[in-house]
Every structure is written in structure tokens, then in C-alpha cells.
Length: 286
Image (tube, rainbow, N blue to C red; front, side):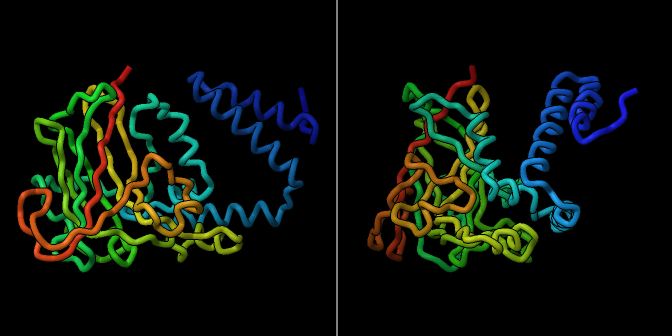
């Protein structure tokens, strides 16, 4: 019988967790044990530090609810979310690159018509986003569903506010030629929530807690690889220091200024407004 020593503990734990019935589970858990033990050995983890880490994980779980996911936020700021996105979304070079989902997506957004204003009177500079959805050969994807959400002009998402209806989120379908058009307001760069355990941890570093101005898109169309991505405003603050490591060159677009007049959806916009144009390119499933 092998009794535990500092030298053999990791091997014993790996052997024990290697007994998982599913081979993939066994691989995940044995690798986790090896890396956790290697981390503790490398930094010579103290008992007080271990207890503080347990307390932080407990507080992170307690900060989660049906609208706030503090563990996703933790994964985002540690760069793990972006790494997992990169590992699982190795699209062809012509496809739109993926980036992080983030902690603020809400299921069940209402479907909206071409050109619908998903800001519906919320304060801010009007913004039209237009373009096409195609495959990598340039073939339009008709009827593709774009799930869109964003922060408001103060940097707040619906899930951070006490509201009972969909706010700055909607689902738009492409037309037969793959075109789409949505109206909203220009988003603002914002700080991640700093009132929880993740914010407390970030506040102990020199890391900027800000994200650059962006709009989220999720396109999950049968026959194509699911795309979760952002559009970032060109020239926005914090593009180079995005706290969740989400910025990519191919996702930075210009917001051009236009006077009041005919809008991209054919209707008249009675205010000066911004326009952004972007074509989403989807990879076909292998």
C-alpha cells in the first residue's frame, strides 16, 4: 500500500482520477490535477493563500444569478475564454473571426424586422449597422438569424439594470440577398463590473478594467459553424487593452457620420446619425 508523501502525492491523485469511466473525463481530470499540483509547487502555495482562493471562488459563485455570470467574467479577464474560443473556432482565413460571448447575453430576444430600432428611444446617437451574411464563396445566406445585443450610451447592459422588457437586444433575419439592417445607438466603452470578486481581483493589479465600444453578434445558422463575435468602433478607447482580450483587427469598423435624411432601411432619419457596414462571412460545417 502506497502511503502519501510530498513526492508521490501527485502521481497517486492522477492515478485515482484516472479511474473516471469516460475516457475524456479521465483525461480532463488527470490533467487538471497535474497542473493544479504543479502550480502549488511552483508558487509554494501557503495555507492562507489557499483559504483566500477558496473564499474568492465561493464569493464568485454567490455573485452569480440568472442575469449575472461572475464565473464567465472571471474566465474572460484571465484570458481563458478567448483561448477556448481560439481553440474551438479555427475558421478558414476568409471567415469572420470569433470572439468571446461575454457574461451579458440573454436568451430569447425578440425577432425584429429589417431596420427595426432595437434602442426604441433610449438616449444616444442613432446608429445603423448594415451589411450581408455570406459563406466563404460569397454566396448569400438568406434567412440567417443575427442575435444582437449591446451596452447603452452609459456602458450598461440590460442584465445590469432593473428592467422587465428586452433592452438593446433583438434578433434580425437576413433577406434573400443576405442583407441585414439594424438600428440602435452608438455603444460606449465600459468598465467590467467592479463590485464583485472579479472586480476586486482586477483592482489589485495594474490591469485596465475597460472594454472598447462594441456590439455583440451571434449567428447560429444550420449548415454553418456558429459565429459569436463583436464589431468594435474604429478609434475607440481601450482597443489595445481590452480587459477580456477580445479585440481583433478584422472586427474593427468605422462609424461614419451622416446628416438627417434617407436612412439605409429606406426610411427617413430626422437626426444626424452614424453608419457602420460589415459583411459577416460564415464557415460551412465540415
